[in-house]
Length: 211
Ligand code: GRF
Image 1 (tube, helix red, strand yellow):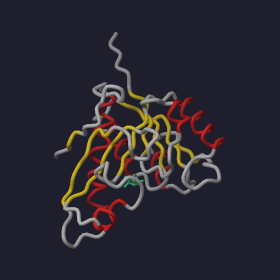
Image 2 (cartoon, helix red, strand yellow):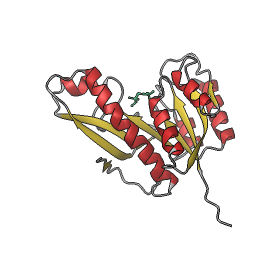
Image 3 (cartoon, rainbow, N blue to C red):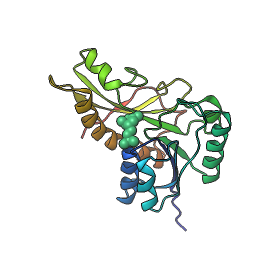
């Protein structure tokens, strides 16, 4: 009997969840042989939770603890436990605004990817569009990368570029970069679902996405 295993995907969000939506829609269009088995949010009011639930995906807020930028010990364990139970093969950080710590990474070694709105290694962390403008860069973009213990520092997988125009603002850049994010994140999830790449075999040389 032919059996084609679907990639089981857990997605972590903190807000709007438009990158999560891009993955769900790509699965619905059968561009990814996968299934989103769990969506977790560290914010109760994340709009993305509603979209996931309306699409029949188990989605819940999970208390992140008292820290603002990371999960505290007990909360981290709760996240690890929930993801383990979902039997996810891949964990996608899609606008999840917390630093991922070693215990989490050890639990899911090589299985965590992130979307970041800059051309890494430029502008790790926050306010990427403002920093690109202030530096006078002529282009910016976004990167999907494997997650390691350095913030936004893991092996880069795919990047997409856009030109910076004279009257751009952080807001206009965010809009154009986000459109590219919605293309490259499902692309990478599809590559992983087809078994084309794995963290251990991948170099840090990103593929350049061209439409
Ligand atoms: C995206 O720009 C992502 O790169 C950044 O946060 C934003 C999340 O957007 N880390 P959304 O929640 O996926 O709409």
